[in-house]
Length: 159
Image 1 (cartoon, one colour):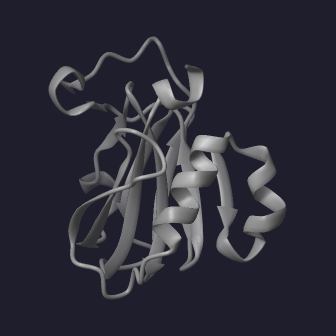
Image 2: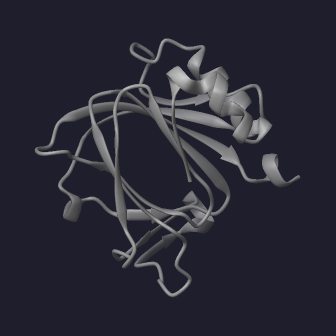
């Protein structure tokens, strides 16, 4: 996991692989406050794309915890405030819903070592394969957020 903010991007980007740098910068070249919701291709890396989302945040117990295998996620908050549960990979947890083959997502029960971070607009977090995350949790009460999720194929990093 890597947690950063757009205002520190120039200093922070050296710690991320080139494919993540390229896709993040390409995504930021769009007007994310008005871009249509949904999936948008990224030209800088083959098979990479980003999704513009607007959600109502949820209470922690209503938000599922997830992990991915084939894609690295860069979650960037455009508007609102969001708590995200985070946990290290835990090989002892079995998925309660496994959609990895079709959708590259599996859902899990709450791990023992879950912690929380709070994203403000302009902040982002990178989740690598098998890192558990519980996005879209509310701070106090549910509220609408706007965020983007960049999906970068693991093959772009380890190829």
